[in-house]
Image 1 (cartoon, rainbow, N blue to C red):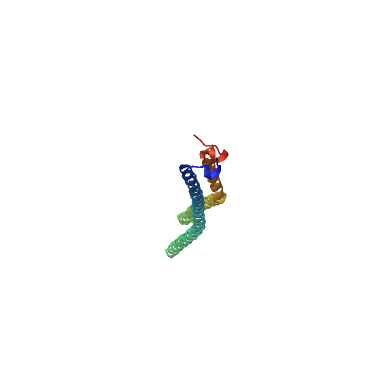
Image 2: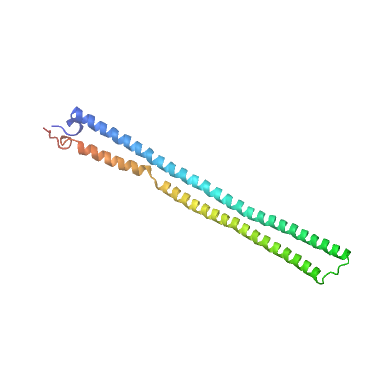
Length: 196
């Protein structure tokens, strides 16, 4: 009796050829499946990097807005202080023109009250400015943290993508396919005996 390929019948030969074809197509399919997974991971990582860059840009914009808020409040405070000064100067001129003695009695109280109101307005505006600036800066810090976390996630995805090895998937499929082909061969293939 013959051994090996010649010992196989037509159906067995077709089975072996079909097993080899199936194994080969499995190898190719797993290679491209792994490549596809690798590209998906890289694409997700690039998307996260883009989000990280946008978060960092937004952080800078929020910090810039905080500085703009400070400038706007400072300008508003300067205008209010000037108006209060003009109002007090007009009142002094008016009292002096009418011959009222300044700094004594009720006139002293009027100017002290006006000075107190000016100071309260200035402190309130400064408090509002600090609160508004800190809110913007807090948003900027949160945006910076978000950007850092997105960067870490992107880095992790790049690392995962680099660990995907199509050849490992191919070799696994090859070993499984060869094992299946060999296990389905009749004994006559190996020892020359016929099955019957």
